[in-house]
Amino acid sequence: MEFNAVILAGGRATRLGGVPKPSLTYDGATLLSHALDAARGAVATVVVGPDPGTLPPGVLTAREEPVFAGPAAAIAVGLAALADRGPAPWTLVLACDMPHASRGVQALLAALIATPKTEGAIAVSPDGRKQPLLGIYSTRAMEREVALASEGGGLTNSSVFRLLARLKVMAVPVPSGSTDDVDTWADAAVLGIDKQQEADVKSQEETLEEWCRMLLQAFELEGVEVDVNEVLAVAGVAAHSVVRPAAPLTTFIAGYAAGMARGIGQANDDAAMSAALGLARQVAKQYPEPGAESE
Image (cartoon, rainbow, N blue to C red):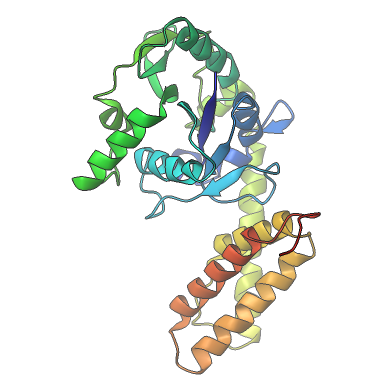
């Protein structure tokens, strides 16, 4: 069965204290890696969320607008990104925080093969709960619903159940554990994810924030706001799309360009930095793969 995959990896993780779910490690691999493995049969895959810079070749990235607009908006952005690769009849929608989701994906695929005249299959846990973020849906039907929502109030902060409300989907029982997710540190503990990861991530974030403040003070730029996560994300794209040393070079040039734009009065600090980082990300993503023929 031919399907594409939309992996959702861009939530706030507020109940985890802001620690990014995709980076949590379970059984020797990140939760994002487990999600990618669960979607390994997909023709094309997109990860909707911050680009970690470590995605396998060919895996797309996208970001909902505005950021943190919710899973329904993220699904819409993912579908749009996949459309450029050529549509598949079905689309797997998968949250990145279910390390055993692969068991459920197999059950969903089997159900769809047995019952093709439907608009999708949604996972149902052994206790009867439906999990729309572990489901395979008709691509055409999903695009139709996204278009209808766009004509109305849009999908920002809308629920996935609302997006799926008019689809004729079948509820498919999945193996125990398939839908177990990580919303809290209690959930993580049940799965055996060490809370030490929270301390490690926070320690790194605090160190970077402190180093950023020190650099800004040294250059007498105390009033400038720097989005550390965005800078790191752009560096990650450059490292992944070009070569690793391209990361610091890219951020240096982007920062220099932002400073020039600010210095000549072209834009304020925030706008200049946002534009420079956005352009750097775009150019890095378009960098030809090694061995690609030049025009």
